[in-house]
Length: 470
Image (cartoon, rainbow, N blue to C red; front, side, top):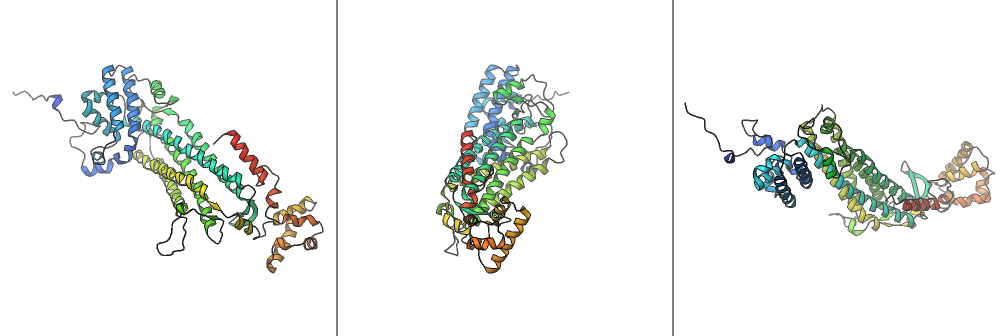
């Protein structure tokens, strides 16, 4: 009876896939192409290297790796992180994890095979993503801080300049350009705070949760959390592995920011139209027409609107991705990074544009002031004037409504009225009532906290600067 041949382990060609010898046949090329994520998640390479380095140190503390093996692994990982692979090399790997492990094996041999002890790609990718979110959020918060400062500086300079305020996109009341810009500064500051607040509950390290329920290897997860800069390890392995709350909260926060930038973009699109004429776009942030020589198009603002729609679609897709998944890991979750990376890229680019464009916007103050004469925007001031003199507001509202109706039929404006005209409608109108009918007066007379009064806008800007929240 012949003895079976024994293979030399050193001469065995290992399966390049991380799931090794379970399958008798290699993955069909079509199936491999369908399941690979390497072209998306290769941007996690620096974070995978950091997490793998921390894991190597934890394995040494757990007596799985020797000090010499750990040192070799750390040196090799450092080189892998320093030199990203060329695109043609990516197609041979399923994901960033298999790429790192394959490179590591080629560099240091069998010691590389020990690195994955007790670890799964499930907790590995969650850790990589958490590190990515933390780093990208820091960058985005810095940009939001800069944009808030720009809006506040411009609001401070423009707090006395009147402009029309709209509700239902119809003339409503006279406001100021400064108050309008302050409103966007407030939005951006909320966006900044939202990113910070939503990420706070997620300051926990997933590494060490394994594939579903932890590992028998005595790895110190508190050491891992500290080593990677987290405040603590995650508390429940099954929840950790199945959860994409961090990504969802982050994409939500970024989508709200893009929605705010989209709203601002819509205003710039309207205001730059000559029929409004409130703002002139800088040449280096405008485009022309291939046919019409006169055109000055607000393409950057239009693209911001369009990309906000993409972010909303990403958030919707991310929520739909998770809605029917049982515990714990399902391969559907591989798709989360597409939504995450796209949204981060969209907001990063939009913030870069606005950081440069907003300081260059040329507001046409004379046109804004002139437009305040249209639409009977002082009507509410007249009604409140009567209310302060004892006339019930509903009756005052009716009186001023008749005035507006009469003027509208005659093609006249509120500013055309004389004290005698006003008194013909109600004797409570004094000679001082006509003083209300100027663009500058209406905002100044606002008395409530948070109003558009120039003094109130100035106080709010000063308060924000003193709080240093931006």
